[in-house]
Image 1 (cartoon, rainbow, N blue to C red):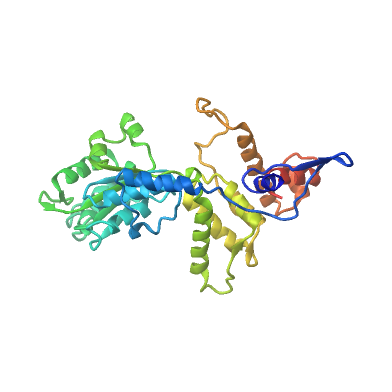
Image 2 (cartoon, rainbow, N blue to C red):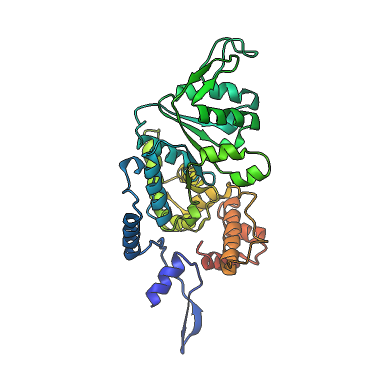
Length: 387
């Protein structure tokens, strides 16, 4: 049982370990090494999920989805549903927080479909100036507006025969939503500056991190367009809900970063220390996989040697900004909360920031945090697994 407590306290649930005896009373136990581990669902549960997939008629995972690193049940179901959607030539709406891999899924759906040999065109709708949205999507004729020196095909024509990925579709202005709806209904486009229509054969895969039903109620998104896009719907889970996937993603992303940087002058192959991995496993990742990739990239740049330390990760995490929607106060109590976990998250957040800001100087970090001494800070670091 003692071994189990050591494993739990050094990995998933950072805690203060104590021992007691008649001779020495109660005293703290200091473990002179670091451990890192992530909970993985038991094998029998995974077997149950495989049987459930067969019972529900979900297809086996296709090789086109192999780039989506996962092993948790929610992602397995998303991949299976995406494979099923790929086989049907219908519009798809992918919803999920920023950084959850919406474009990755869109590309996999295209590659697993009958359109795989035709173009896949990705468009960030939020990056197009509003006055140019129609011209970019549907094309324009020469002289249609100031600066239109020549006729130009739009993204729909460029994707003819293939798939058009409309990322951040919720950013489109209402007037462009009307034109997009007509294109989906009539399968033809009309370039800006002409009345002549052109047929297009395009499968639209749209994505958004907005809650479109809320956007509809606020009058910012057309309900008829929503129903036209949401024939096949995928809801991607955030990284914090992907139990068992984080360690797998850390290894895959770090391997990719090492491979990409291998040809750069003076680069040294990087590996994670146990303490560094623990910091990564304990972070909530509000930016999801994109934030994880950026954090690992920064840590590989800042680590001077071949090993990424906990301090390197703490400094890499210190520059990230929590989303405005993430709050400590006012959380709903209907489904219950874990007050110890919330307090631990707050403590780890400020401990990491203080250490990063003082470059590991415990005395300075203790003063920033209002703790009595560096020894008090050390006790806090041990309590929350940051020693």
